[in-house]
Image (cartoon, rainbow, N blue to C red):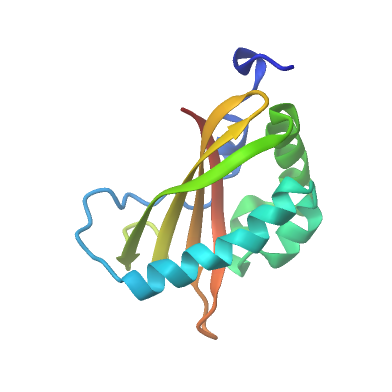
Length: 147
């Protein structure tokens, strides 16, 4: 078993595309939050299966534009996720909705935070979602942080 102190918790911080300052926002849109949350599930399942290339392909264009390259994404995803080991459980912690947040292109965003338990310890997984022109929700950011 990997000790949590040996996991590079901040490794994905360098490739987080969107760290929205949404904490002070008072907006709410339960329907959008629910749809964005549902859209995180297949993407996280691909992450859990180590299908990082598919995650890259399925992420929103803004994610790919800002990460830099597929190779950078693959390296950071392996570096961060592989040491965690097996996931024991994941549950929704909270969602935050905003329109036109500072530092992001105009549009609708939902940040979905999960509490999850892994062989290596407990983490928060934050998945930032952006509504796409076709109305779907796409991943624009992913970050893990030790609880």
